[in-house]
Length: 99
Image (tube, rainbow, N blue to C red):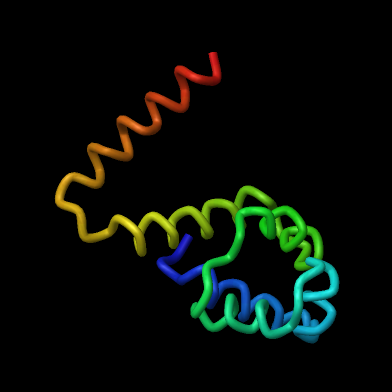
C-alpha cells in the first residue's frame, strides 16, 4: 500500500477503467459536482461511498477502506506527536467493543 491520497487513488482507478464521473456519481446517487470535489480532494469522501466504490471499481473493499482510513487519519491527525500510541489505544478500544 502506498502513501497515495484517497482522492488520487479514486481518480486514478476511475480513469483506469474509463468510467465517466457522471456514471460514478449516478451510482453513488450524488451530483457530479460533489463527486468532482471529492476526487480533487476539496471535499472529504463519505464512508458511505466506500462499499459502492469498491463495487463499481471492482476493488477489494478492504483495500478501499485501508486507503480511505490511512488518508483520513494522516490528514486529520498526522501532525500530532503521539499519533502512533493513540492509534494503538484506539485499536484496543475497538477490539474490546467487539467482544
